[in-house]
Image (cartoon, rainbow over all chains, first blue to last red; front, side, top):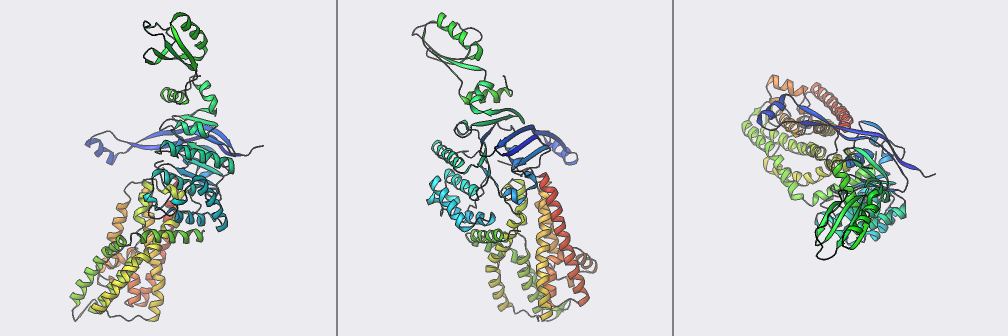
Length: 330
Length: 263
């Protein structure tokens, strides 16, 4: 039986946020009487993650992804619900727990800016009590995988974002954590660097069996890395399953791409076909999955069709639809 | 406890700070100015006589020792703790399998070395020109060591618990400014405590601020009667324990409130 490393049950996190109307009078009033509003960032979400899995945690801005990761890593206390990671309650922040997890934040550095990363790595090896011999072995392996030998002696402040991110990953993996939380690890990186980091994370997961939970707004990260995704929106869990199943389960539509013959009159389309794009006699229509065969036949019979194809929508379009609607439509 | 990690942090912070030593030397110079002003004020006032029982040379000795004690006990780290909490940078330290206070302590210890590289030679040069007068008995010198350590611990933990108020208010630095003002007034900087008027001296004896800077200087200078010395050491130790307890209490309830701002 595969070990469950992360168990989340009805996790809820509520923040108390001060609110104040605009203007000077409101600002004076807030001096004496402060008003607060409760914001439910995460609402009763439950899931399990097994050892070695790579799970994409996706959702629009403000969905509650980062809040959930911060609870799992022990940075935040939950308002209610239960969480166990490697058998620990994360927010108790026991050293035995913290020594086995790692969190890499795309927009927060754990490196010291004025000194070369090698110095930070050595400090981390001491903090995590990694023996010298093992430290050298792990470092060599990571340097090799990330092709970053030249960076070891370069002060962090002189590095590009991509170079810095490589160092952040080394810092996060030096002590061989069993669970890794990655929050937007490719944020702001160019396409080529994004690809290299994705390949590294895939390789590393296969070599070490580390469990990874990753948030990203780049769907390319998710499609390349995560066989499983957990989708949350407004704090609620909308989908938990294979990435491949996301489109068919959550986006009950197909895209019909259609090219009409030259000089065709403006086509009359049935009401169930929604035009997504239209350019030079080429149309992209969105139709209900169940209606697709009937509608395709209808189009072929009634219009001067030069070319036609029926496709599943790209994952980005599925996600965009869900983010905009805010609910699962199937 | 993780002494290996703590020592590694000290070395790292020291290496980092040495990159900017001129900045820290300037800071140290800035902190020397107020005691230097009062050194000149009181030594001039004493002239060939005594003021409050202290001669010109004793005022010079008092303030030169105070300059060193002030820099050895000044907890600069506390000014950044509030920022770490407010902007979420505390995240990095909360994720490590050691208490974040190790980071503050390493900065403290590394900082003292950097500051002393500047302050000690300057104080020595000043001593050559200003001719201090003091006799350090063995007993007072031995008592000076624990009183200096207590002063540092008291000032550090007192400032740390004030900085932890950043969990509740975004402008906790105001409390640190107030602490600095009270140290300046009641901690033996404006004047040695023996010169403070009756009610003010009484307040200074009871509050913690004198025990953060002025008290170790008074101990080393041997200007306290033995009953005052014993009372002072007990009061200093008591305030130090109180500051540590407040730090632990606020840390425990504060981390529950922490919002870990930012990605």
